Image 1 (cartoon, helix red, strand yellow):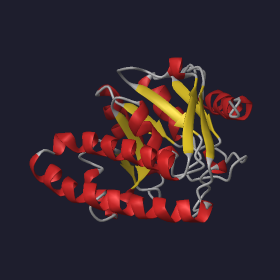
Image 2 (cartoon, rainbow, N blue to C red):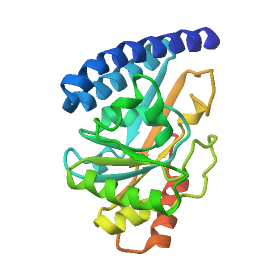
Image 3 (spheres, rainbow, N blue to C red):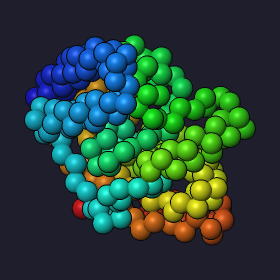
Length: 233
């Protein structure tokens, strides 16, 4: 049954992405300011598909630490593709920090920049960090909520990869507190996994961290929040 549900969801995913991607051609040409709204619609329907087809739900705790409006810097663990969908539905104006390769995806990729996402060349070294600081600061100044996955890639459930320091540099430069987020989403939708297992993915939002405490202290406090957070609900 899990295999069949996963197969049906993959068909749903491809079909939904194609249809909205085609709609995105018109949006990009005539109303680029609506690109984010289209992405948020895609996110809502994706979560609805996971809930209906795969019996996967998302449970949120610490919602009081999320902004209802205005700038925010969210540093989340990254275990699953689910992590890259859910923030579209939780935040009013999300801006993901994402890899440049995603902009090359047909239909979907060309909408990322018009939607205000922060695109990075991960092979760019110091130049990539400069772009993060400039483009991330611009997104925050526009009142966007910036989502960054400091581990840099999806990690297996129960594993924490060493965080990259860019998030701390952006926090310090913009005087924006970091909101750490722990998750166990990899238990229901693993890294590069075909199978989506029925269950609940937990998101635990922690108290914002003071951006003035220094890079090492920020990264340590963020990691400790991930480790200490109760992602079992």
